[in-house]
Every structure is written in structure tokens, then in C-alpha cells.
Length: 400
Ligand code: PMP
Image 1 (cartoon, rainbow, N blue to C red):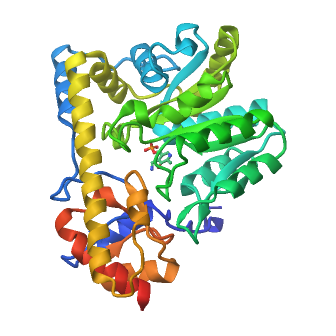
Image 2 (image 1 turned 90 degrees about the vertical axis):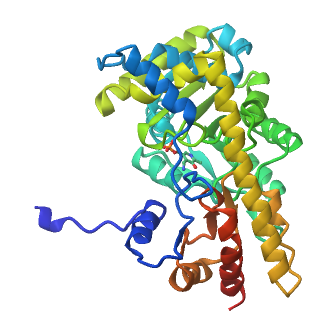
């Protein structure tokens, strides 16, 4: 009976937006969910997206079902964007690419695949990680454990701890890695560290599983942000990569992304793809077409592709400016001499402030600054003119 259904708690990230909406204060600031805003704090639809949509209307595209694996033109460009069009794994047909429901749906599809074909395997998640990773693997019934990642003493990477934990895991584990702009910490390994991580993963016969939610949005360059993935691919490893176009093309609600599986041989890729399709069919049958057409049109047209890169640089640049301003305001206002430069070392849309749960609650309850309780703030939701207010709120919450 429905009477026995218990009330679920609000989602720790999306629940923040609900609370923000209910607040009537005019100084309120929503730094919870990771969504890009303009300097005026308005949602932003990229010009290239509007142009691609106009083209789609002019062509009179229909609304027929897509195949289970998605739009062929999208699958081609999404793999090329990720690995590089001249990458041997693309040239040799060693990648199984299936369009799925943005990053989340792609992760979920891969999790179902792991559960079916690697029932003994475990997934290793960074501590901390994006909260939904745990939900995804829990619901897919894939066991997971954590590897050390964040070091609160340095507000940086616990590199030695990370390697030790990956080494200590059972051979053949899946290691979930954030391709760039680690969420929630904003702390990424250096290229040299990525090589060492790859050494350990190779030694242990682990399978890397990259989550790439910010390609081009983190640094402003598609290639720079894909370099971690390409390092592992160049070593000839088999691996997973989940992709999302929520942030870099601002297609949050279109649910467009893909799961890519790099295999050792083209025949393996064919079989893997057939099984991914088999898993997708009873889950959601086939993916939505609108976002796939936008991506295919933007990437497939040299002019639009160029404009997209400019708009991505603009978004990444605005986020970096806000990061710099917040650092300056905090340094000016903080009389204790605390070193806030860790904020500048972080990359991507988030900053991990080091505020604990009670301090984060003070941010919301006293200052109307909405954020997740782990101390993460979304800089993409902040404007230059609000940095000073935010710095006041952080300092008050930090020291009181
Ligand atoms: N992975 C990470 C690390 C993310 O930060 C996000 C977005 N918050 C996603 C995946 C997936 O987002 P979406 O499902 O909107 O693509």
C-alpha cells in the first residue's frame, strides 16, 4: 500500500535550488547547482545553439525515433571531440559510442554494463566525489569504495594516498576519474601525476572510467580538458568515458551525452555496443534527438564550431575572473593573514571553500547564500559585483 511509502529526503544538490526559490530575500545568491549564469546572473543560451536550432527548423527536421544507439552524426563527432579525430582508436573502429541521457544517463548505462559483465568487480570513487556517483552505482547494484583524493591540510590533492588506495584495491577494479575540473574540489592531478596514476592502474589491470562533464568549459580548450583521457588511451588501455554537453554547450535540460568504451579490437567494440543497446532498450528505448542534432550541427560546421570555442572561452574566462576577484576580496578582508590562494589553484566552475557543514549552514541561514553543505560553491553562478558580499559571508561563517 502507498501508505507504507516513506518520504525521501531532498536531493543534496538539486534541493538547494528549491530552498533558494522559496527565499524572498533580495540579496540571496544561488551557488548550489553547477549551472552557468551571465554577469547579470541570468541563464545563458549559447548563440551557436540558437543558430543550430534555427538551421534545424529551416531544414524541417522530423521527430521520428532515433535508433537505440542514438544519432549517427552525433556519435561520430562526440567521439572525435573527445579522443581527437586522428586518434588511432577512432581510425581503427575500436570505440563503442552510444548516445545517452547526458552525463548521468551515460554513467548509469555503463554501471548497468559493469553489473552485468563484471559482477565481481568493484568501482573506486574519489573521496569526495560528485554525490550522484554513489546513487548511480548503488542503484545499479555495483559495489564501490573510496580512494583518498582531497587533503584538507593542504586543500590540495592527496596524491600519495590516492596511489596507495588504487594500488591496494582488488585487481581489475573500475577506477572512476574526473577527466577535468574535479567535482566538488576543483583540484586536478598535473600531467605528470596523471602518468603515474596510469602506471598504477595499468600495473593492477584496473579499468579507468572517466567522467568528462566539463570538456572545454574548465580551461576554455577542448583539447587541454581531454588530455587526461588521451594520456590513458595512448597507452593502449581499455576504458570507459562518460560525456556530457550540459555545461560546455549549456544544454542542461536537453539531456545530451554519450558513453564511449575504448576496446582493444574493433570486434570487441561491436559486441560491447550491441550489449549497451540491449541494456538501453528496456530502460528508455532510445535517446532524445534535439540536443544530438544541436551538437552534430555545431561541431560539424566549421563556422559554428569556431564560434562555440569562443563562447566556451568566454564562459571559462568569466568563471576565472570571478575566482580571481573572490580571492582578492577574501585576502583583503581577512585580517588573520590566512592564505586563500588555494582558491586560485582550483579549476572549473566550483570552488571548495573548506567551510564545514555548520559554517555552510551559516552561509545560507544568515547570508542567504545557497550552497551544498560540503562547502562547495559554484563560481559560475556568481558575478563580479557579488564577490565582496560573498567574501564577507565566507569570513563571517569561517571565524564565527
Ligand atoms: N559528472 C559530474 C562530475 C558532474 O559534475 C555532472 C554535472 N553536475 C555530471 C556528471 C552530469 O551532469 P548531466 O547529467 O547534466 O550531464
